[in-house]
Amino acid sequence: MVKPTSETGLSGPEGGAEQESTRERILDIAMELFTEQGYEKTSLRQIAERLGFSKAAIYYHFASKDEILLALHMRLHEFGRGALSTVDLGDLRSGAWLELLNGLVEQILRHRSLFVLHERNRAALEQLHRQGHDAEHEDLDILFRQVLANPALSARERVRLACTFGAVMGPLVLSGEVFADIPTDQLGALVREAAHDLLLPVAPV
Amino acid sequence: MVKPTSETGLSGPEGGAEQESTRERILDIAMELFTEQGYEKTSLRQIAERLGFSKAAIYYHFASKDEILLALHMRLHEFGRGALSTVDLGDLRSGAWLELLNGLVEQILRHRSLFVLHERNRAALEQLHRQGHDAEHEDLDILFRQVLANPALSARERVRLACTFGAVMGPLVLSGEVFADIPTDQLGALVREAAHDLLLPVAPV
DNA sequence: GTCTATATAGGGATAGAC
DNA sequence: GTCTATCCCTATATAGAC
Image 1 (cartoon, rainbow over the protein chains, first blue to last red):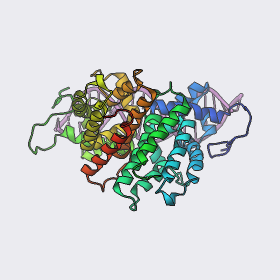
Image 2: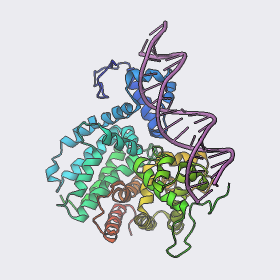
Image 3: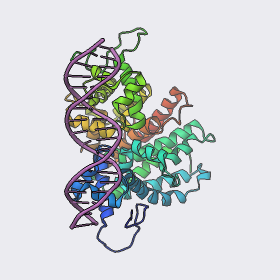
Image 4: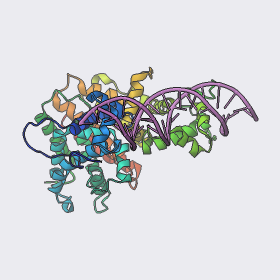
């Protein structure tokens, strides 16, 4: 079983305005359909149809349907790594939270569709995690739940953090396209402002 | 095809500590499995197995798998109606928002598992809506998106509202069981407080 | 790299016995 | 009200031709 590109799901920035590889075209279509209909309701036949070739052809590029979802998941991992690694998870008191959240806002604005995909296919993605996906678990979800369970924090602090996380998700991934008319920059600024207001009483500057 | 109970999915409060009807036992198990694994990944066989009888028996109580999900959806509708009808959607400026959000917090705290079910099966539920479910559409989601799209509101107000909605969802339905150690009353108070802080600059008292 | 054809399994749904 | 048996369809996945 020969694979044309790497298995990470991200062929990396080879630079230039290259033509999209078939593998990536599959991923793009899959992302669209998985988001609209959900992972399980989307069949490989449907994906292949949109691409103009037959179902079986997909198996040249991916060993299974799960691997398509996994590849999409890895795309997000890639970006998440950058935002998370800049923050020292030790000192999550003080203003480090804001920094983390601001980084999150930026990432979401850049790769919004990926985040929406994840939000709408949580069940399927969690099962991927259980089954294997032995890769490191630096998932956003998992990270946040760890922080929220931190016994060193007060109940108020924990809840506030969860609220702030939600406040970011609300307009950016839970609200569909209602904010399409607002320029990205402005949207980001407004969300950051809200996050700031929420964290103020907990982590005073 | 004779049905033992009403078709609304809610047999209503007949009072007392009655034994749960089979129909409701099915719904309870379904809710659990749909939440854990997602709607599509859950088979009728699986539901029947847990109840100790066979797959086909379910068809005595529900005409299709979709109807099980629909019945669960109607359970939420029932509760939502109360919270929404108290608020005049006309004056969604001023403090009416807070009132609406506070009602929402209360409902979520009471029927949390139902909200989680909905959050984790959005795709499937949206398809239900498209296909039929001709019943009135007083859905929370739909209502909120209407409000968020209201052109009479400023961008800041709209985004703030979405943030507040998210801030409520964050700790209450998106965070799993991390807050199980915090008493319900305290949790509600903390969330309401956060919602208040978020809406302050937009809808001063 | 994409095709056809096919194997195989599982799920939803129906009929009818008890 | 629950069961057995069965139908039918769709989906994933494989084998092998071109």
